[in-house]
View 1 (cartoon, rainbow, N blue to C red):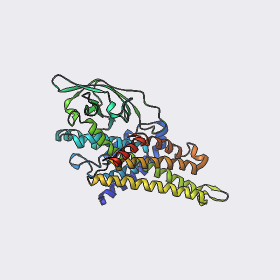
View 2: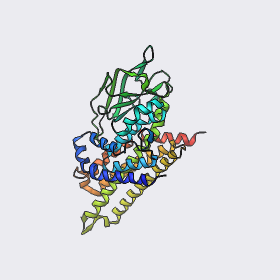
View 3: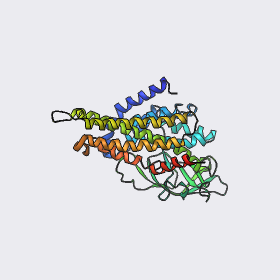
View 4: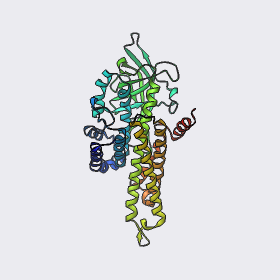
Length: 377
């Protein structure tokens, strides 16, 4: 269960967000600046390592606490919250499936914020269908190295990350032919595509990562050969909770803006918050945010108790991201014409919310996951 120390971490996060993230977020998004200094700040503050073991430099905190930290960051700067979630995802395979030597060698730099990771799973023709991955790693004759060739798509931090946790094919078997590697960014043969021109999250650069006979030491394979799909899917259960928490924080920011504006904007001689129609809209927004938060916290508590949580993670991702889309859209409605301008962050919030329904598994995939588990057996 969360402790006084945990609450202190959440309070620290709130202070850092108010003082150093929120004041620069809008300008940085407008300029599409990569927030490298911000990630370094969060690393120094111990906020990039929270759900991992203390023996390797982690914070040793429950996932429930980590997700509340992600929510706080998202309420100030969504691109950074997404980056924190992505980085945590890149560390997961090493923490959960790495050997003792790999954990000792790799995790301290990963968790301290000295290095930032990219998660290379998707490809142009392999998004929801992980079994369609075609990027291939070919072992050398003595199996001391692997040569990786292929392209990954939609990769956050591409060109800025210090390492890439990549899932590549080492065998032709659709589900048992994938393996996981942690590949240093300075490996020869790695290049990057032109950054995608996205409608939101401008400070989260996304592009293709190309591997052209990139030689990787076999000691960088995480887990056994062929275990990659299992690792990736296990990691995504946790990653979906990161997205759910970030979406909730974004929705909270939109709600806070709408409430504040409604108290200040006057029409017909009184604040628009006094009109019942608008106050009911705000009430529905609050209900959506509160419900979203309860949903991701429930899934996190199951994870912390070592109970199955895959279905609940899919539910949380679905509920929280749909809520974010609805609440951010309604926030623009509350602000009226002002909400449609860039003078207020409401329009940015809505643009940022949309992708949460798409990445880490589309919400249609979440429904498939939920239905299959309901009907199993």
